[in-house]
Amino acid sequence: MFSTVGIVTKPNDPLSEKTAKELCQHIESKGIHVIKERNKIDSGTDLIIAIGGDGTLLNTARSVVDKNIPMVGINLGRLGFLADIKVDDMKSAMDQVLAGVFTEEKRFLLSCEIDGDSAGKHYLAFNDVVIHRKERLRMIEFDVYIDDSFINTQRADGLIIATPTGSTAYSLSSGGPIMHPGIEAIGIVSICPHTMSHRPLIVPSNKEITVKIRDVEEGVNISFDGHDSFHLKSDQTIKIKQHINFVNLLHPEDYDYFQILRNKLHWGGKF
Image (cartoon, rainbow, N blue to C red; front, top):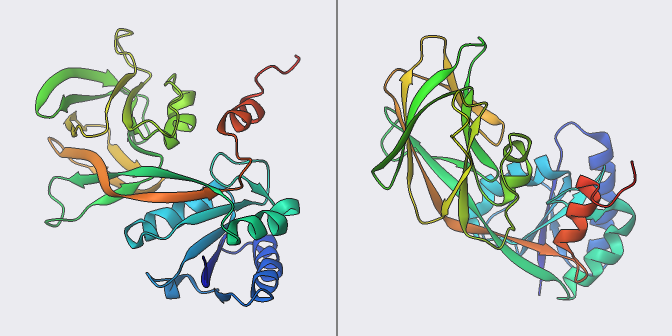
């Protein structure tokens, strides 16, 4: 099924480079061509293997989502939500995947446009789009709309717009719900709202969410998956919707999302 495989490593990480070299030799021994330079990965690549952790896979996914290349994640540390294959198991797991024995799932990203940017320019987020105060303790004020319908005006430390993938990241620590990755929905979670009646809201993924910043006296930033942070100006409008293309994640056949939740969140563990 796979004749050309691209391998992406965590930048400036010797362990990631060492692991990639070992895996590269293993894959090439099967007669499969391996691309080691990220900038040479194109639509002719059949599979991408991200070696590092969830962050490495997130960064890679944003850059290749429109090329429709399936991805696999090798985790160098603790078990990840996305990069779920451990280094000790990577050769046997990749043998299964390369032989066509795997579980496949589609996950969507968010596409964000900021009023005042270049026409047609958009930013992608696999986990979340976060609007947050820059430094001071003062709350920020913003209006929220869904498909042009006014929802509310909020005063809070910020707002998280999360995909199901991102529901176990910043959204979870801010009181948001866990969404199964198979659900096509978007989570809207306030960060420390002034009014406790502002509760997390889940909407269908075909809805467009608009946030209008009202008060930027102390500075407001927007970030995508914790990266690419930009300053927002007074009355600036942000539009967020589901990206048109999906990321195809491949997992070993015995992949169990709920097992990962139990391990990561220590469900059922003894105190």
